[in-house]
Image 1 (cartoon, rainbow, N blue to C red):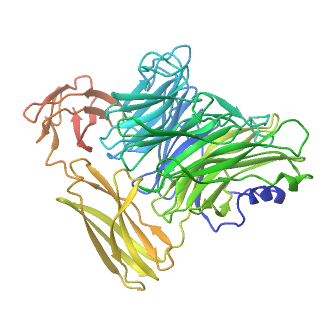
Image 2 (cartoon, one colour):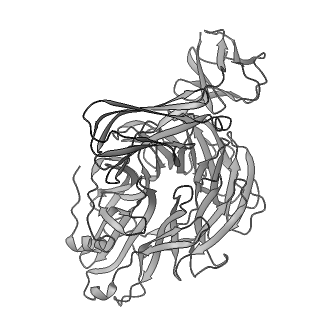
Image 3 (cartoon, rainbow, N blue to C red):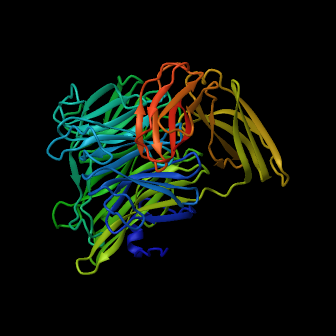
Length: 639
């Protein structure tokens, strides 16, 4: 891929964000799409050290297939080397967008977004007059829809973020101006809507809080179809939710003048909820201008929160009208929401009285936390000068006090980032390809980039985690060690928030094969969690930290098995769950992932569910169910 070369004076613009270049290098980068626009909204790591991207597409060619019409939600699965394993278009003939995605314990994915379709993959839409409904979709590990639900009322309802809860349910946050349908007791015409659903999409509770759920803030530019002439740079103000170590939630959204302690314009609105959705505290942060929050992360169990977003500054140099210039505003909060530090990356306009720049936008769109505690911020930048406009993406690393440690310049505009299993970072966004010389328009593609981790002072050949009754045995082998100090064994219930559960001293320096092990007592956890995740944190004598891949542990479902008979079958198929008593959802899929039938109740192992296969074509089919968080699967053949 050809790298972009940017004018030196535009690189000097970014120099104010960072005093030094970082040694971050790119492991791989991918551009995916078709003849019409495709956009990435969120990227997340997967258990196999690959990644999953959620977004949208208008295309139905190139890398895209299966579009249902207009814009579809587009899900793309990449392996650890960036190769496409599969892609799926989800939606109907209306506009459908996937805004957030998480991998679930069964290896599948939960997706949150929006739809104004009511056909194709979509059913149950509440909206009228082409408004949007929240759309939640559960898909398998290969992208087959397992269930989908629309949530909302007759007006606009748009989900921006979703998390998995400890009881295997989900909480999503959305903007709504509906007051009917699923939406009850909304605060005002526009509210943030927080909804808890169970594992199959049944609402368990919902909460509301005020703010600018559907307001838009804009920053200057004119031609939104042409990056070389400048984007419109307006923002849809979403709300972003993260699970916290106390089993509650932290939410970042936009607060307007209806919110207590508003500083003027839009503010960062941060809300802490308990596990039942009760508000523990709510605070506003920002300047007297518009402040648009884009991401929030918890910093360990007791480390507080890091918040990323953008604010506006008035350009007092150029006399071409009141130009507002956008710059990142990064805020570090403690656990109670008190500011510990904030970093406003403003430019010294007094030094640019003869500057090339008349307008600029620097956008911080996502924040991730490195294994050594650094904060990695990514986004894009654009500046207008007398000869035109230059645009590019950027990624910078801040230390624990907010000081920049360097910056890298990938090709695309970055909107989402995540820590990879090997300690590196994966970021996703858009890249624009020149499409038409006559009208100077561009087409957007998904852009995904993997940044390498620091060179490892130890070669970890393998890392495994194995369930053993009430324990988990972790084992690893090193091929070489150089100044290695010790290993931390870390555990997680959601593959995202890890806690150190054990420490093993390293040999230090060796070129021989060395074996290590650590046993973790999980007797207090296996009654609540059917899956746990482990990784290895290696610490060298200089304090450098690197991570192993993530290993998943699935606890046996106590001898539970799924049996289908007779097999092969001509007519009636009997489906039985041995050694199980309770309710379960049994689904039948064909071999391309289409769900043909679903039975949502089961009593006990002495009763069988009868499925009529008379209408099925001859061939092989799959029956699935999830019991205690573990997916069971059985194939049968229809004669």
